[in-house]
Image (cartoon, rainbow, N blue to C red; front, side, top):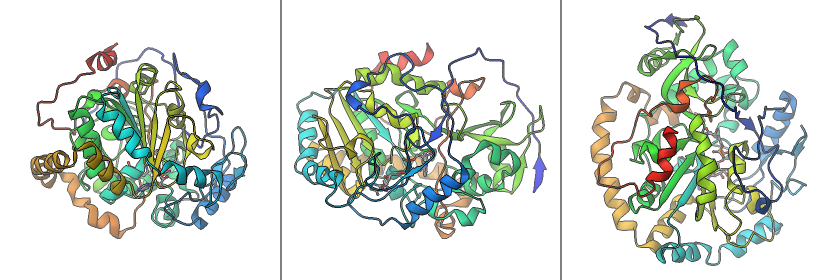
Length: 449
Ligand code: CNA
């Protein structure tokens, strides 16, 4: 690989702030969802990944043998506070099978849960909706998730020549060998994929003045691309919109980083000569400052929608336990995850299992929003596609990504340490096209606090 240089922009020193790092698995998840009511910085302290490579390898081999099903599937998960992978149906309850409590809960939940929530929305009882999302909302756009057997990143690691899946998002591994991540980044850079119906459904929540905030683990930028405004979005695991030195955090022009990576060059920090990376949060890195909006948002939420996530990455996963205990929570996923694996479900919890695009379409029909969403998709796609065609990133298009069977993106988190990205002004992938008004401006204004 060649090395490229570019003009640099040294970041101003930042005041010390509370750090929240990304870690794999739900090691410190509160055990009783009804007990945790977040205030302040939340129940999670600084966490580091404690898994050993061998434990991870074992964990992943369990994942790869699990079947893909509309009902709960097997997913490896580390037990709280230990390095021992937990098997289906064991103490953490992470894996369920037909007939298991989760499957029974799934069965009972599918009897009208979606309709109940739709009714609440139509009655005007949900005006501060918080959405928590993961890679599953983008699989319909052709971007693999982490854990879906067969297609997920974890099942396709050999393509990247790494010892274990999470190495691709491990900052120490990157420091030694950025190539695996850069190979993946080439496939994931925004410009290759289009938002799907699910993204536009969330955009419609905003359009209706109901979206308090969307918290996404995704780094594909599709939320912004479909027009969800930046002040409604927390990209908890960072994004490709900015780039910086992985060592000293000196900012680096994102377009130049992209150009270098797309051309198999390594972008180099002009300040310390270490490797530059897109500001996607790696394991062990801090979350963006914006993430801390959750301390205000979740207590205020009157409906929580959890979509397309296995709730395996902390501290993000525990967010779902920080809404008030009376607040309805709706899980849309292929299988039960997190607190929805427990039976009985908490009062007010609903889940609708199966393919999410189908589920979300049904939900939209119940709400009477389907035609508007279709129209919104048509108008937004017309506006954004020309931009993408002229984008340098479009060379890696979806086709080549799929051909390589490429996995998915890492979650990134941004740092609260001296990373300006924490407050970065969102290089908007979003092109606001309608006259939506932000009915939750009071919450948004906290960004500048
Ligand atoms: P995950 O662990 O792969 O979980 C995804 C979940 O979505 C699983 O439970 C799947 O069963 C479910 N799912 C996938 N497709 C569908 C579908 N069509 N219908 C219903 N359910 C579906 O991914 P998480 O997001 O929970 O993990 C967090 C990681 C993944 C974050 O750090 C992300 O950055 C990272 N990631 C991001 C992307 C992206 O940006 N698109 C892609 C892959 C991974």
